[in-house]
Length: 434
Image (cartoon, rainbow, N blue to C red; front, side, top):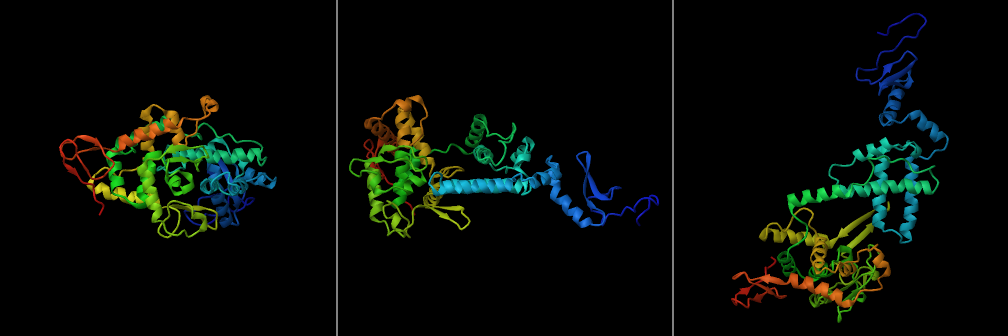
């Protein structure tokens, strides 16, 4: 039963129920002591409203933000985090429409902005964010994220507020603090070493790539050859058109779609023949704009297809990655270890970089792969002799097609999957794909 302290004071009510988190303060409000000080959430007569106010404000209080100050800043027209990211995404979408950034990058920015708003809430103002707030957001990242994923998320979030400051939406760039920085080289190096110690390296041995090529056909075989011949990625293969390379001389010459950096490499005869064989079986494109592509799916779609939803997000359909993964799974049954965490079609590009680097002509390797070069030498360099690019491609070719005889273990160069050993004359059959 309510008790009366004295006749001059109001009767303090009991809690509506035992688990009610607030207590009745003598000033006539429901209150709670948080982080060493009392906070007030509403009058005694409306316990439900006080509880709702408490639930709305508790996260801000624990994060060190004063809810009353937040409301005052909003009343004075201070922009919230939600409004900040909405204006930022509107600007990014315009850049996407102009072709300055990819639709996929825009989707990744949308994901980061959504996580940002979900963490801080819609009422928090951008000007109120402090180093402790960004440190708390960093702690909320999933444990499954590696150093690269963490670094990309932090970079995208920092970009939001830098842009907002330049656009004069906020007075200045907030203090992100010492904990909201991209992981350093040491952290990435340690993560890579731990992964390799547990699962092995991500590149392929020559024998493994031989099995991949010998066990595939059609556009998948051509894509595998492009991956190890010139370090092609999934989108590089999907975007390949007949006008991009010379089927007679073997030269591929095109800026890389991902970075726009000039790229030139020499394609082996085997690679060109596989491309032309896949083109001869190519179906009719479902969209006239894809008629020039060398490779299409059975339904006439690009091998890597980006589909934009009504909300503006992008879903990726990667037929190359899917088919390559299935092939790895199949070969892993006969050659355990082929399939391992992190190994994908892109590992062919890693292998090409590793093997081609042994030529000690890193400039030619970078040019063939379409890597950026920010050195002063790149500013003065006016070109690369074609023979250097041919030498790099031929070095990888010799490394790849050196096979070992099943009978005598003698190493010999042979492009043909079925070959006869010159030493013991034993026949070496190809691995058949069932």
